[in-house]
View 1 (cartoon, rainbow, N blue to C red):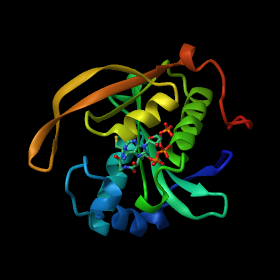
View 2 (tube, rainbow, N blue to C red):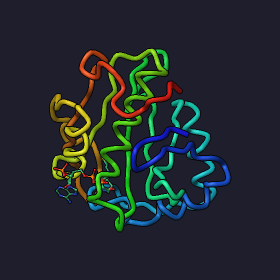
View 3 (cartoon, rainbow, N blue to C red):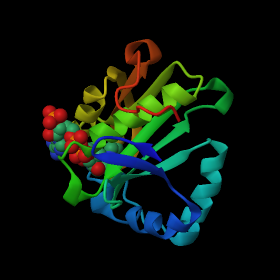
Length: 180
Ligand SMILES: CC(C)(COP(=O)(O)OP(=O)(O)OC[C@H]1O[C@@H](n2cnc3c(N)ncnc32)[C@H](O)[C@@H]1OP(=O)(O)O)[C@@H](O)C(=O)NCCC(=O)NCCS
């Protein structure tokens, strides 16, 4: 487990797949800028296999009392040999705007730079998703540019903004005090 100040990150296990299926079928959890999707338990099992190809790892964002309030994931953008990492996240609607995602993002950035031989971590978000942009800026990411019409969501192709943080900008752990 990765321990933060107000939240911890706990690796998602196989037995958590039913909760995954529930959250990935809940449009409020996915947020207004995500694609519309309905995810069955067998879809989630298939996702689990695909995630292995991209060396994707999902963490639950948990409050200190163990309540699961969201997800944050990291995965390889290209072939794992390219060492290009990306992150994505979501928090349940009732726990938004409390700083939890900002803290979870800082924790995962610490974890990735401490544990992986990578020079950059990236994240992409819909141009209209101000909350996500704020999370990334709070965690030290810089805006790189626009990915034009790269994502199909709610009946239209949407522009996304690409953000990244470089190892030299991160410099040292912000939250993780124990080396993973
Ligand atoms: C994006 C998301 C994960 C942010 O989680 P969160 O825990 O609410 O984020 P934080 O509390 O750390 O807030 C970060 C900043 O965004 C601001 N913010 C939060 N919601 C906002 C909104 N709807 N509009 C504008 N700003 C918002 C907060 O006020 C905070 O700003 P501050 O640092 O100046 O105080 C959450 O809104 C969510 O789950 N959305 C749906 C899924 C999603 O969009 N995921 C990202 C896909 S790229």
